[in-house]
Image (tube, rainbow, N blue to C red; front, side, top):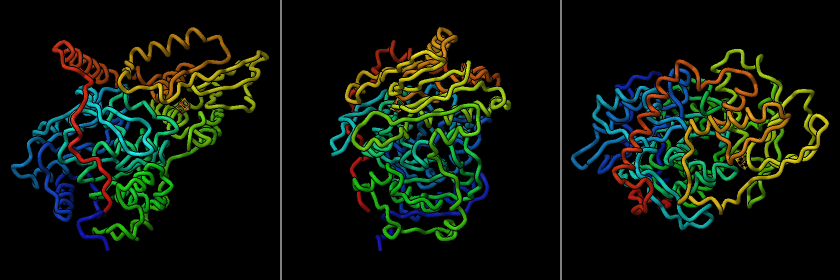
Length: 500
Ligand code: SF4
């Protein structure tokens, strides 16, 4: 039997977004785990995308309120700061995500500090562990300085990594310029590497209404659970088991386990709570996860997808699970959300990923889009010879020290200009590694002739207001001579594997 305070996961029933009820459940969880916040206490939600159009994509504000109140209940005078920090989905300002998620009011009422991770200094963190993708990465200063780190993810399926629970929520502890590095067929390894930056002392996942299938536009699934824990590998393994998934098939969980961050086998994890584990497993084993190949995803639609392998690297496999193909799956769902006639209106398109060497069945007038730097193909389109060469840059050439921020308006202008220039061409190349969800949205909206969500009236005011505030705040800091990237202190949050 593991020791009572080690690798424990608590499964609690909760069928309403009632902050007081959540507070009570979480306070009991903290008590059972014998945890009290101290020092700089930082809570990391999942606000990848928020607002009324995306009600199930993010950790709900009522959940956050319950967690923050419970932390305050357990706090003593050793807490020097209580804060919430996040970098939402790239290109969107995190200010807009907080606003759309209804967090600003909660944080004001509870007097909790708010960090937008793309607006604070990014500090360098060295990696020294075997098998790392690179020798250093950057993380926002509040993460590096956190003494008591609380992870508050949303329980969802995911197109790139099968599921997104606690470990996957770490993709939001990097700003845009650093997050996109290695966000490709090595994404699971990147997530496993990020575990060395900080480990949470406490985890509480919003599984009251979970999200099936996707991360940005998930299908709501009333799971009626709050799951809590004190070890991230154990926690994710139990969440996997609840939906009938072997945690060893999720590479970032398996890797973190192999590197000593925690137990993956259920007999090594103590599971308690008021919902029997076997009952939870029996009830939710049909939960729809992610990880659907792009060819299959678009079957029956007007888009035909073709996917070849990504660049050959050790352990890269024959499909880029962490990059462009998953991004286009999220993009089409956003377009469907904003344009109810998206599928009927969409022009016939062919999208090609990786080193594809099969036929492309493009009829007269149908466009072919080669997506991502690694796309290659040779053949004829519309009777003309076409040779698409790889633009892929070796991983070792992407240096976090010199990573650049891609402004969303600059990106929109670049994609629009390219599409306009090439509007008569039968084939188009969309460069990038990865090509982001935003770029896929822009390209599909333009080439497919459907509504562009970036011009949607319901979103544009909040987006622009937050964008201007974000750019204004960072410009002011620059004027005041505050460095954006700097060598960091060793993260306080340990970052050392701990078996237990
Ligand atoms: S270009 Fe896209 S598909 Fe190719 S390796 Fe990069 S992320 Fe993957």
